[in-house]
Amino acid sequence: MQRLNNERLHFGMNRIFLAPALLAASVSVAAATVLPPQDAAVAAPPKVAQAPKVAGPKLVEPRLRIGASGIKGHARVALTFDACMGKADDRILSVLIRERIPATIFVTARWLKHNPQALQVFLQNPDLFELENHGQNHIPAVDKPVSIYGIASAGSPEAVRQEVQGGADAMVAAGIAAPHWFRGSTAKYDRSSIVQIREMGYRIAGYSVNGDGGSLLGASVTEKRIASAKDGDVVISHINQPTHAAGEGVAKAIVDLKAKGVEFVRLQDVEDMGDDQTTQ
Image (cartoon, rainbow, N blue to C red; front, side):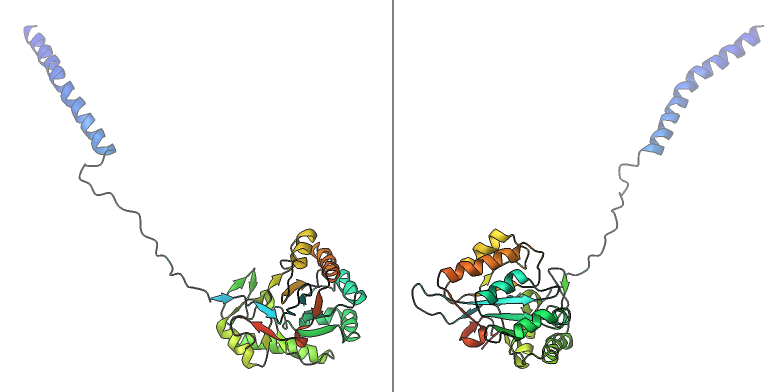
């Protein structure tokens, strides 16, 4: 009996001394499992290689002015209209004819194909309308790949040549005299394309007053912009968006300018000066 009691006492004492050790061991194992050693290196996230930025071509938007009258109260203004695609805007065309106001119209091959009746109106009024080249497919005449207002440029010298020459060929085929002026889609160019177009024999038509913001402005804003034209200004607007509000403003502004005694001229009838060697 005494031996049995001694064994029980020995076993109980072992439990007392082993419990703290087992607890400490458990804590150590848990810590080792959850927490990394203090001197363990933390792996950095892998670096993602950045593609080098490629600079796009430097674009210019040339300014064009005509010879001013120099007479106080008698401003001389050139109205120019782009016919890109779509239909003719009769709100503008009818005012030009009714008021006998001369203007320069830049047409694309695409527009000519879909507007034979408006073309006949232009051809029947040679004293009013000068028809010039706006390109074959309304592609920006820039010889390097770039997007301008969401429109992909020609992208190469060969494509620039096709855009310019294709527009001229379509005009001649439609019975129009060979053009002398070119205005590309968006009216933006890079300098090398300017040199190329000039070597093809064209003067490049910039402008000094943006009348309708690409035909995207409201009627009242458009009217104010065009009506503010001064002696020697070249106004650009659009004559191919009959559903846009801007056309109403263009028509009103033409009447406003005539009421002020403005002299309207075509580009072919006056001296001019364009920036970025576009006319010299």
